[in-house]
Length: 246
Image 1 (spheres, one colour):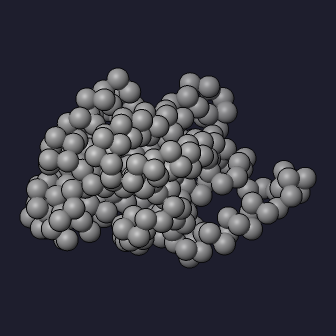
Image 2 (cartoon, one colour; image 1 turned 90 degrees about the vertical axis):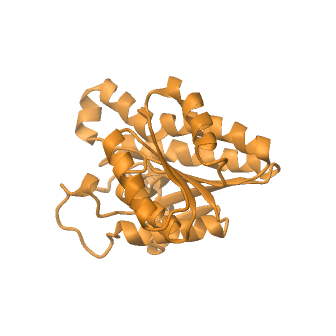
């Protein structure tokens, strides 16, 4: 039986990740901002088979609370084997272009808060000399595009950070997984029209994430075809790419 922590536990993908682990009889500690939503999710997962399921509440962009949160996380179910970090926002690019404070908030929600949490998690996992950390980033971080370069730069920075963290923690027996999903049909993307075959369900993404974490993969593109798509996009010469409407 694993001891699993899910940060950003009320997101659609995180809920499906938690459900997979609860059906396996694993113990979970869920972290989210909305107290009632996190507690309701924990109660539901307990019914669905979770060994133990605890709920913690935290405003994840309140960085000063992170050391306390991580300590509570490890105490809640008697230690943690695997942590999933799944929180984030989808900022409006035009708002960010017109107001730096919007950009700052986007970077805090999609990169800096994750790095703050990872700093505290790394300390804990180094003490126990084992553990797996899986962080949801995005294919948007693979190359800057005019349609979402603020969000993409946040995710790109986070992916580079994860590469270094993976290198630093390997000698301590700790694994780091960078999850780069493409388009996911969730409430956060409900406003986007014309969803087609490139879109995935939260269930599909969650299944891929849990499997990749168990296999200790370094980077996961989900669904798989995004690996090919992004390889093509990265290969386009900059003199040509800058003229494209992406």
